[in-house]
Image (cartoon, rainbow, N blue to C red; front, side, top):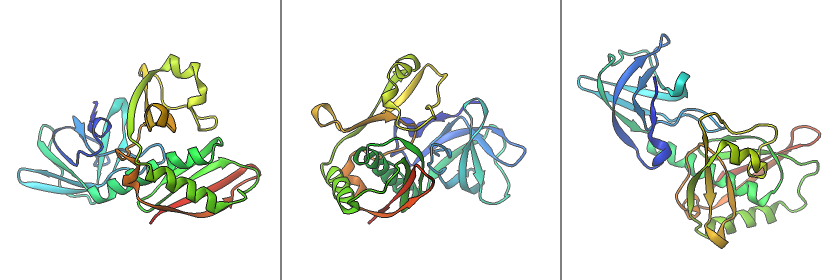
Amino acid sequence: MTSTPLFRDDAYQADCEARVIGLTPEGGIICDASVFYPTGGGQPGDSGRLEWDGGAIAIATAIKGDAGAIILIPAAPDSLPPIGTRVTQRLDWTLRHRHMRVHTALHLLSVVIALPVSGGSIGSDKGRLDFDMAEPPEDKQAIEDQLNALIERDLTVSEDWITDEALLADPSLVKTMSVMPPMGQGRVRLVRIGAGADQVDLQPCGGTHVARTSEIGRVRLGKIEKKGRQNRRVTLHLD
């Protein structure tokens, strides 16, 4: 069972019509299409609501299933729509949009701190990246200023696609240490920030992002913590 990932083509689509094509033994719901982003790449799954003729249920999150299925996880064990039911999916848009802002800001953080990334996490009001960084930065305020300057440039955020072979031939596109993006489908999605001479970042990513950097709003840096001999965790917050 495969769910068409509508969020990949339009991160701003907040609702959709779909059909239930499967139910998991644990009570998850699989539809033939999904505006709900499933947990992955450090980004939490979306929450929201599922409605159908004669019923509705709150969705707590979404996760990846087998063979491209996206499983919607109910917030409570209520009655589920039978297979074949036409449903309306509605995102918690406020939460999704905050994830988009944080996620895009983290891409820019990896531009300002041009070091290999060993991990990351996205929340609704803050996010963090772990860098291969032996010593802490000398000027934390300078990093914050550079980050906000990039945001204020109102750079476009767009996507492109690259073949698996082309990505393997250009490993410089991958910023994460020892972890390659998912391959095997023949192509990998790239997220580009800026265009032409204004391009500042291009890297594989399957998450959701804002359309222009100015939409992020101002950010501030939080703690820079030592998480190992060669690892520093840098946290940013939405203002």
